[in-house]
Image 1 (cartoon, rainbow, N blue to C red):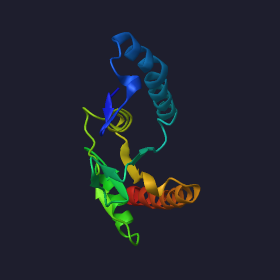
Image 2 (image 1 turned 120 degrees about the vertical axis):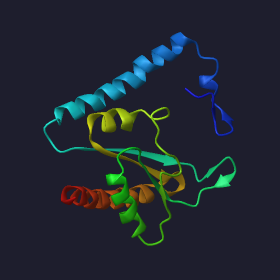
Image 3 (image 1 turned 180 degrees about the horizontal axis):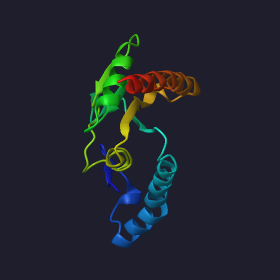
Length: 159
């Protein structure tokens, strides 16, 4: 529960007591991850990949970010490598490989927990926020990833 994001204080996160933090974890974090775990448990006998999708700001601490999309990975690079290659074949895209962030056990929870610990292929997709700020942008990126994730899954099956 960070108290600051980039240069912006988050008033609702300032000076939280341990009790308030625990209440937030119980109300939001735990049910969210319990639901993901239940969904994955229900698919235990089916081939499954885990994809987390996030967005990132066009600039960070005054530095512009030229990339439009980033693919994040940790110990499992298979799916990420395939997606980076597919995205780099798209015209006009600047693609980050473990950028604008990198996954790490000490700063990420979803993919290490729901992907890596289960032995599932997993990846995080980061899309620059200005590209998905309109319904048209959202639809374009949704269509792109519907196509590319299907292609990536086929490539994983063939590997």
